[in-house]
Length: 323
Image: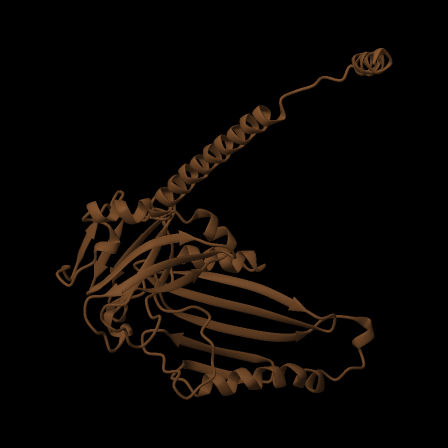
């Protein structure tokens, strides 16, 4: 008996020597489980709160528009033929979604700068429109100084149905895109305008043998492009290597290049048309041009502003000056 007692005592001593502590496993497990459950509940509450905040932020524009009668989303059939809301100095400010203009039963809003030098916008018709060109509406873009830098006729499609919200984009020259700040939608009867000023743009092309001089005169009326006059002349460049080359034969190269343009232009109602072997000239009146039977591509559309022409042409290497 004494021997067994001493053995138990020795085992206990060994455990104490090894710093082994005996704990109540049953009570400790209950405490850990309770703490884990409490942590999970706290995490869920935090996640739910975050989700509520995110949802509220996403729905904030819609919630605001419910109480804001000027919001574009509150469009109704009672909108006046010509009206506006929340304009800044008489303009829609780009990247602001609370301004809108209604012109000739079409509401314009949500002008936003996008990638690739484009500006997107929404429009909505109060009534069905069979021919958008008949509206004679122009979208004008201004810089911060309220100087017009771009104008484009509104013609996204021939017809617009009443009701649905539609979208379209405007693509600008990179320099004009940087300046764009305000927008205005106006009605302009460009057919009745008269020429008040002009600018001349010139450029010379060469391939080592030929020099081709291009001259285009752009005619404006009240800052709106009405017509342009094109002149192209091809000449043999002076070179010792070309002394034995026949001028008449070589100029046929540019005669052939002019043939395609001649065919396209001749099928329009272009005026003052003239072509020789090394010479081509014609005038395009944008007020009367007829492209129905021609593949001719207009350089610019009617209503284009002077600044647009100068910025675009000069960025392409042309030299432009006021006449």
